[in-house]
Length: 433
Image (cartoon, rainbow, N blue to C red; front, side, top):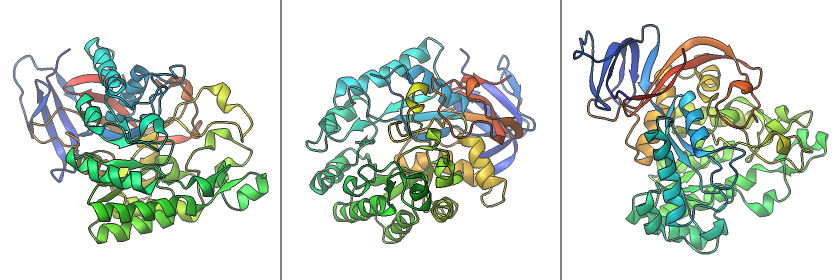
């Protein structure tokens, strides 16, 4: 496939360079060659009109579940990467809670090479970077051989799906990962406080007769890990922040210079515990949808920049699993193909976050925070680009998803903002005609 093209006349938004203007973008040999007005382009380079569209750095998601190996009926590396490209993502980080988990170099290398294999065959999507397990078997007892995981391609470590509960293990992880300049990602949940909980603790849970998960389950772990990051100098990244308390803790820690970062999901920005009424399993997730006060709190954290990253926590499940009784249904939703539109509707349309700052939270800031080569259209950088129509109105219909799973709480939503083209390394990996 051609790795050169000219995107002409689009609204180019590049937060890394402070660019927001109608310009052309020239891609040559898989890299950004120029961003300027009136680029003629070399002979033979395809010219693609981007008039009326936004041209931005490809979106980056540092929290997805691709299920392979072990649960390919829910998602595969190929289907997940293609779903990501359809959502405008050019890089995704694959979590290690697979079967078996990504706790050894062979498993980590498999994920990386499988994504590359599909790309070589012309059937790839977003770049897939594996995240290694922090502990063997995700058991939270013995630290993995992190050096080997990094050598095999791991870009971070986590026991996501399980918290790193032992403070001594977390301390050692924060100390040891500094040698490789990678973050420790934490699923912040005190299992003793949340044990048996299936939704947010509060009036809705009481009305439904369901056991709740209190805000303190998240906040106590966040507080502990902030102090451990301060002690060690390591980088802790709090996954799927869902509470006001966690946002406040991160805010105060960042003001002290602690190396702590965080992410918020589109569903925690747009939904509350009210979505669970009727025992809707498509609204069952962990951490759970919280109160309206928490939704507004995490939203303000994104607006202020305290929370730098928006990540989907894309968690595919087979429909039969989600059709179980609420207590027995698995946690999680798919989110790659709806994230951009949901965030535009929640943050940009009301006028609370300008579009360039949304692109920063979904692309440039994750790249900067996690040390990813991306999130920019500067000449010489990889040509990872999303082209989208911010005004295109559409109805969410999971039957058209590229993901293998359909478990979305946004089914039937009227949204605005649709991806037209996703370019990875100069190659068009998704195009909506």
